[in-house]
Image: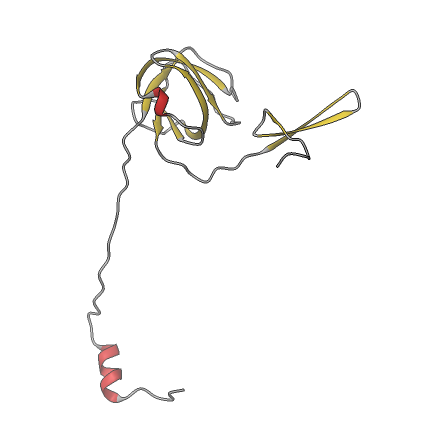
Length: 145
């Protein structure tokens, strides 16, 4: 172990300015699919009807990122995980559990971005039977991983 820096090493460390090279990457993925909410939906709705759809609805995969905004491409109303889509210009978009208010004509933009999303469990109790669900509606069976 060295006990002390030499005078040339110390001069080098104290010399200003130090140099560094910084790099930055700005990822702005193109949207896979865009649409607008067809009519207002209640807070927490998971099945959202849409209109004015454009893009590749067949290219939308479960787990992609959905931006909800008051203008095209914005995300001021929220960001959520897509579960499924049906339809092309009009149809239904199924999303993860949420607490969003879904105003009529809000803009929906689906990005080819797979974030690390939380998948919450749900437990129901009816007639003495406890049912466990993952991702709200997928029945969890202890025998199936």
